[in-house]
Image 1 (cartoon, rainbow, N blue to C red):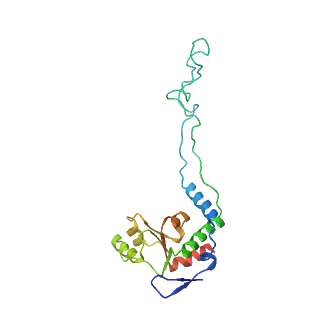
Image 2 (image 1 turned 30 degrees about the horizontal axis):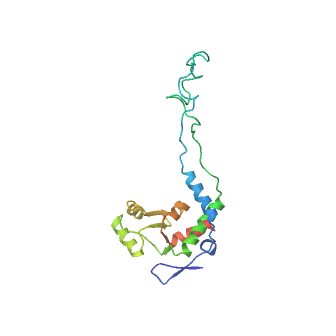
Length: 201
């Protein structure tokens, strides 16, 4: 299949396998959920009754005092005691194999192309790291909420987009499903398209 380059009469020949893939919502949901879960720290921790310092001595005898039975001053019922069902550090990662991950990326990219949210350009760069210059170029594209994907990471582009809350810049190697879905438009350079095809086929 062919994709029209933005503001040009030239068409770029692309792979049907990547840009013509079917939209698989369950797969995308599973991969995005796994990606977000892998980003969780999982370091939450609380002290259970047996982990709180102290409380080794029984506060009073079992019978005859008229008070409730108590075995430790570190009981969860007491002030300064442990936590019932205390949280422990754990790993939230979910297994997603490479085939599923690439399939989700293919599905997202193909859907972006079908809905005209994918902008393909011959090249996209800045002479100097100036946010103002990037904003002017984005106005010409008609979108202020955009992901810019390049073949190699462009330092000038990265520094220019750093202060823009709805603009992100990455190369193909750093591309992930969550970033692709977060933005209204995705701008891809011609060399990035070639790298995408080589990766996803």
